[in-house]
Amino acid sequence: MMKVSLIISVYKNVDDLKVVLDGLKYQTYKSFEIVVSEDGEYEPMKTFLSTYQHPNSILHITQPDVGWRKNQALNNAIRKSSGDYLIFIDGDCVLHHKFIEHHVQYADKNHVVAGKRVKLGPTYSDLFRKQHENLLQLEKRVEKERSALKKDGVRFYEEAFYIDPKSLLGFIPRLRKMSQLKGCNMSFHREILEKINGFDEDYKLPAIGEDIDLTWRLEGLGFKLFSVRNLAVQYHLHHKENWTDQSVNENIMAEKVAMKKFICENGLVHKPNEFVRKPMKVLLVEYKFHQEIIPTQLKFLLDANIEVHLFLNQKLWDDDLLGAFQKAVMITLLKYPDKWYNKVGLFFVMRSYIKRFGITHIIFNTLDSNFNSLITRIIGGIHYVGIVHRVSKHIKNNEQRALIDRVDGVLTLSEQTLNNFKEVFPKKENISCFYPIFFQWDPRPYNNDSKEINVVIPGQFDAKKRDFQPLLKAAAVIKEKGLPIKFILLGDASNMDGKNVVLEIKQRQLESQFIYQERFIAYNDFFEWISKADYILPLFTRRIHNYESYLKSQISASFSWALAFQKTLILPEDFSKMQYVSENAIFYNENEIEDKLISLKKNNSYSSSANNELSFAIQRDKYLKVFKMD
Image (tube, rainbow, N blue to C red; front, side):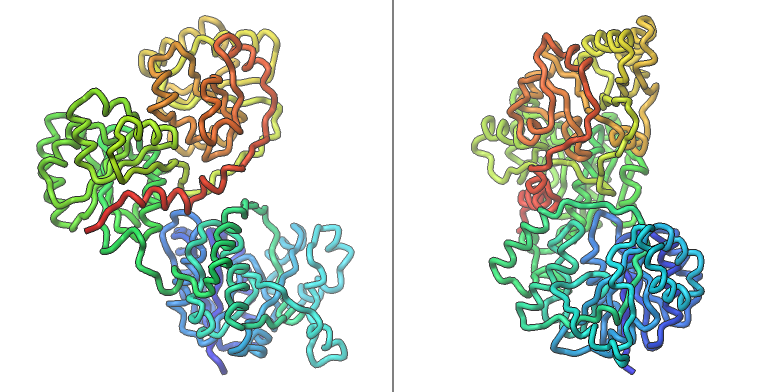
């Protein structure tokens, strides 16, 4: 018998994987190994598979959970598998007991075997989950109980029927064709996948990359699709579906189709990274602030297969924000690195660390530091990249202007600040910008059915950065009129400005209109509030100290939260020309901010026309372009 590897794609869904694995015990074709291809390192998955007993061998392949990288996980599974023939399914698809038999029966080195699946509704999915030990009976029930299945919301019911190819109706499967592959039901001889270099890892979002892309590349090399519809039957278990905008992947594929790239460049074998000429070892350093932009950078660097080290003030550590990177990144937490008396020791620690681990690049997460200037003056042989949060800080200070000259690359956090930087430092080359909007998950809009309107004010209680007076005036009117509008203050109210704002809220008896915290909240709670928001309000007016800076040389983290979580901003009309902001914002002038807040409506709309430019792949490439190698 031909040795087969059944590759199962999974992400955290342990319960359904158990149902699928139990169902495999009924397969009529016995000679196959099971390869669980996990796009992550979920501890419950590891625990389950380490104790689960199955008559067939199970190989568990994992990788760091740093965003959607299913194609990379599949390529890893192909490399580690031992079968001559590879069958691919998803971890929520139960297989008909003759599924593998028919994939193997029609295996051929000149074509690819492809099938579909019936999508069960919630009731019959639960039936499979609870009674999967009676798989053969369940298969018959699905074929017979059409009316009940229809009521339960079954989709593609025509795919539920198994037709014996030797029966009188055996001609029917031969008439049913496949126009493209489905990633949950397809199989190949190993050498076919090797000819196209496997799955294309340039795709960084779900859909298209793991099946539609394969279809045109295989057909381009002369391979045909052989249908096993109604033969290799598959039962997809119901779950909530997360739809993803496919325009980014469509654009990637369109470019590859136009260039006839049937053999992908980043697949089973990788092309040399265009940004990396020799192994890069990067040390990312942050002493004081801005830990919120670190996850995006770690994802970019890890995605480019770069070895990453992190020096971070221990006060900035947050498990929700950075915990998932602990296995993929070498992390050193620094004790009071912002204190002058510790910086001498830190300097020697850093120099020793660079030598010990062969660091090639240092990224200053916040460039404007005299200590960073000292490091660039004394420690040579390193490529330095600095992130500029506020361009104006580097203009008047001579030492900071000199620091700009000494770093090899500069990154800003928006197109607006990049343009301002170019005006101020026109001779500086190797500059770019990126938007820090990527985390350990794909932030999605929160479906809040409540009639209450949530307006979130992220960030510090800082009178220099936020004008609370119009907000308090609006809240008083909202309370008087009984409007369903609530303001969520996510800063730490324990500082002096915070105490003053809270005191004024209490004096005006406006507690019912506000939710506020007397300490910094964990990022998990912070992100939950952002997800629930209908609007994000940075509280800018011309009375704040940094108003002109925000317009030109500085970016507010509120903009990043809004772009990441697809939320509508409430802003002064001076910001109406800001890139990516104007199409999803409500603008006010100085005299109407209270009226705008009072008239807010429930908001669930968001325009995503900028999604392509803000895609992971494009932002990653803009980030990496400033990294030089000898």
